[in-house]
Image (cartoon, rainbow, N blue to C red):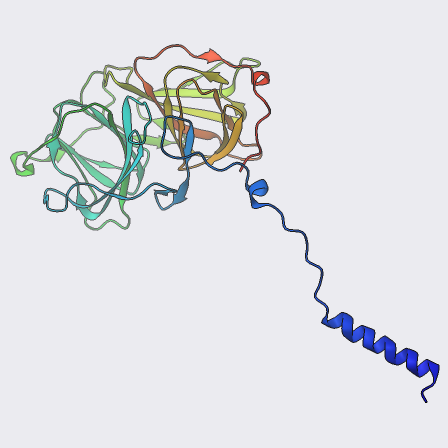
Length: 337
């Protein structure tokens, strides 16, 4: 018979082996919904929303579309994304993104509606009439009514030429033209007033050649650290919409307000927070934000971000005044996601 001490040692070894085979207790699962915050609103409808930039000039939930029917041989190497205006939004304009592959080109055409191009990536060429300009990211191109135009990416370019294109929601169909009918010559950038074709070269740091920004005096309880530069619409261009650039310094914020007209913006640089009613969501470079009619809204610089928050904003040219909103009238914002 075994001694009691030996029996105790054997029992201890048996318990140790059983414990080694037993699985570790599982930590309780956390709800991903709680961690991620409220789901994104649907893209369809005339409500506030954010189109998240995924990088490489693509946006979440926004499909790639054909520029024109493939049997139309007036273009080559162009793709398109419809961002705002065709999913129930009540804007006076449509916002699209076009990308031209190296060696590619859009149709050489004219139409009676105006449109504005904001260069996002790569180097390109713009022909308006017989004049040809080289363009870079940040440049603004305005084509006036009836002005023949085409956008091209040079054959030897190292990357595609991508740009945002803003056109009137109600517009005529373009008329194709033969580029050979025009003698090409170098264009001269100009910020001339009037409804004429022009290019506004970007100088960097939220500045364009020939234009001056205006800093709003800080107003306690309303806004802080905000400046604005009028790009298109206030010097005799399109009567349908205005295009402006806003910059919000670290610690700054725009007014918390509402108005009957919708507005759309593209985050050009930095990081921030967009409040849409009670909801607060993070935004960063490349995101597109749409504020629906009468939706209370505000843009704020993201705490801890070293760069200013800069964004291009489009609003209807004919619009009513904004009404200030007291944040206390809304229940507390949801967590950022």
